[in-house]
Length: 55
Image (cartoon, rainbow, N blue to C red):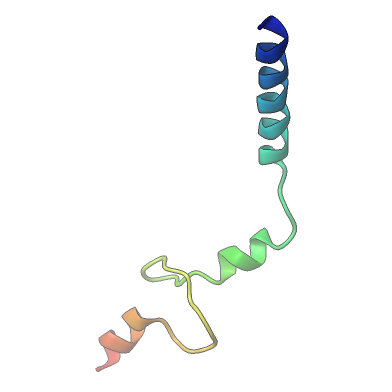
């Protein structure tokens, strides 16, 4: 039982270490957010919040 708990804690520690790493492409994902509302933009067109402001 102690062996299973030890392996579980080691696995959690390893996941925490990998979770802190910055993966490539994170800056590109952050730039895909709308500066006004913070939602992710899909495609190349403007966000829905800017469409509703203009019209």
